[in-house]
Amino acid sequence: MAALPDNPLEIAQRFLAGSGQIQSELGSGTDGIVYSTSRPSAIKVFAARQPYGKELAAYSRLAEFDVSELCGHNVPILFGHDDETLVIEMSRVVPPYVLDFGKSDVDICWDFTDEELEARLLEQAEDFDEYWPVARDIYYALRHYGIYYHDLSPRNVAFVNPRD
Ligand SMILES: Nc1ncnc2c1ncn2[C@@H]1O[C@H](COP(=O)(O)OP(=O)(O)O)[C@@H](O)[C@H]1O
Ligand SMILES: [Mg+2]
Image (cartoon, rainbow, N blue to C red; front, side):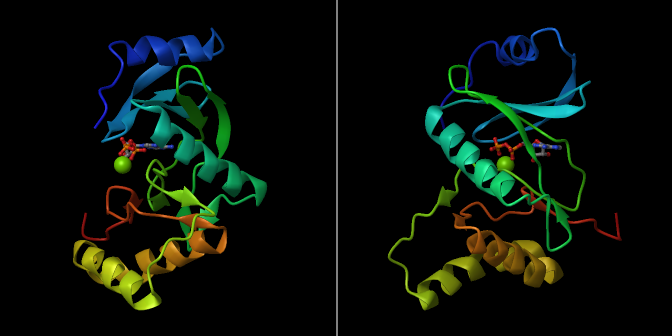
């Protein structure tokens, strides 16, 4: 994992350029750190150019088709980005949602057979428990838009758990 810049908060603030404030940290993971803003929006500061480019390509594709929801899951809408500081601004979402496209590919088919793909997908099934059929549908709904989603996990594809 690439290291985050020393000053992600400053980078996020500079991106806003005085047209809003950073409110709090929404979360972080392998590719970046995400802040909520007063606009309102979410700003993700990336640790490296490659996941930034992948996520921007996926959100651009989703924007092209006006996708803000998939299988009942909220999908962040692309608001803006900066190629120099590796920042993406998007709408803030609440579960159920699907987000985090830093490891997905757009329009890149790879050499898996359907069986190999199903086997790979099934490795994630246990993590989702009874929610797996919907998580799997989301995977294929993204593929419909040419997005190959390689990071299927309950952190990125979140459900509202009635037991919570
Ligand atoms: N648009 C958003 N709206 C609300 N919360 C978000 C948003 N984007 C990210 N988050 C929160 O921040 C966490 C980390 O974001 P994510 O994009 O998954 O980063 P990483 O690529 O580093 O895993 C997510 O698990 C989620 O809790
Ligand atoms: Mg994540």
